[in-house]
Amino acid sequence: MKKLTYQITITAPVEQVFKAMLTKESYKQWTAAFNPTSDFEGSWGKGEKIYFVGTNEKGEKEGMVSEIADYIPNKYVSIRHFGILDKGKEVTEGPAVEGWAGALENYSFTDLNGQTQLNVEVDTNEEYIDYFDDAWPKALQKLKEICERS
Image 1 (spheres, rainbow, N blue to C red):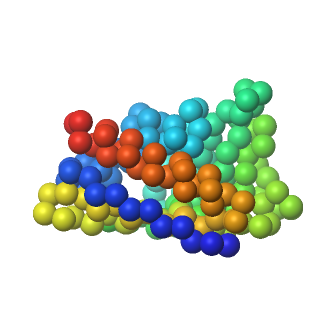
Image 2: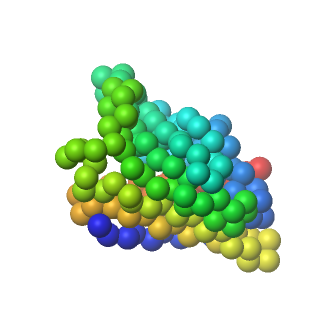
């Protein structure tokens, strides 16, 4: 697995960026760069199961089955992905998940005198590098726009 890193500086306080990133309505807006129907089900508490969901071109629910590995408000969030949702059903073993199960997605928030530096680290397979290198900068730019507009 490869670790990809993305970073953006947002002219807004850390608390505002953290809230915009994880609140359902704004989450759906900035993650639309990955899937226009992007959403989550569950909560962001440490140890909690969370689903990152959307619908595919056939209108079927799909996404990631994950858990919040760590959660420090306004500082750090770590997500461990361990399965997929396929037509609404959890798949946590087998060929569909064995190449990336345990992948982490980490968000670090740093205060820069009223601005926020957001660092994102994502574990991924070779096949998704181009996709993430396209989608993550767009998603982070959208998050920046949401935060700076508020």
